[in-house]
Amino acid sequence: MLSFESVFNAFVTILVTIDPPGLAPIFLAVTRGMTHAERRQVSIRASIIGFCVLALFALAGSAILTMFGITLPAFRVAGGFLLFFIAFEMVFEKRQDRKEKISDVAITRDHIHNIAAFPLAIPLIAGPGAISATVLLSGSFPGWVAQATLVGILLACLAITYLVFVLSQSIDKWLGHTGRSILTRLLGVILAALAVQFVADGIKALAAM
Image (cartoon, rainbow, N blue to C red; front, side, top):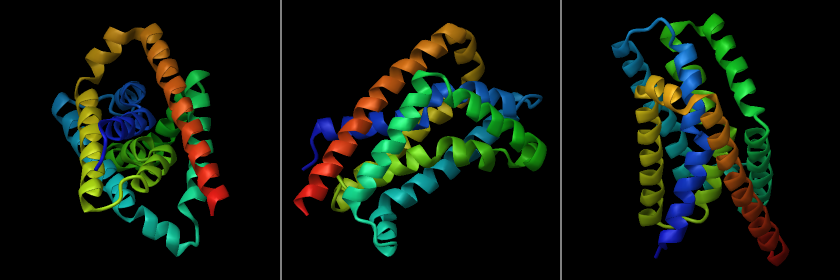
């Protein structure tokens, strides 16, 4: 039976790797010039696509690893290092600069009608960090009930992301530059601690094999 702690840790891990507050200014940048209704459509489509991608890896992540001959402990160590790198970027404000570069490229190449799929859904929502975290967590949620719980956690995180997109203009004004900086660094420290735990658990499992 799943404990509240494991469910809560999974929720925090996925939410932090998606980083909805950090996506708010990017969402505003790539949808500039759109009406409120058009922005709502983009936010719905991006959230649905992002959820579908992450749910696929939540349900079939282990099978995908097996197909490539990768053990879950090995992926746990590699994913932990990747999450730690993302946490490092968040603490030192490197991730926001990278996201802004991605959004600028998308505007010129894919135009407005495609931005829900790229760059919003992939790679900003369902990026390497979120996918890695989802696959790692799927190994800790065995059985259909646990897998359904993980999908429910993903749905809750994407619902929050959708709300942030809808309210992005108000949230961005309310947080301001200082508020965004503090929140991003705080979430980065939390993610770093979770990443270290992933690596430690992976090394322990590899040693026991």
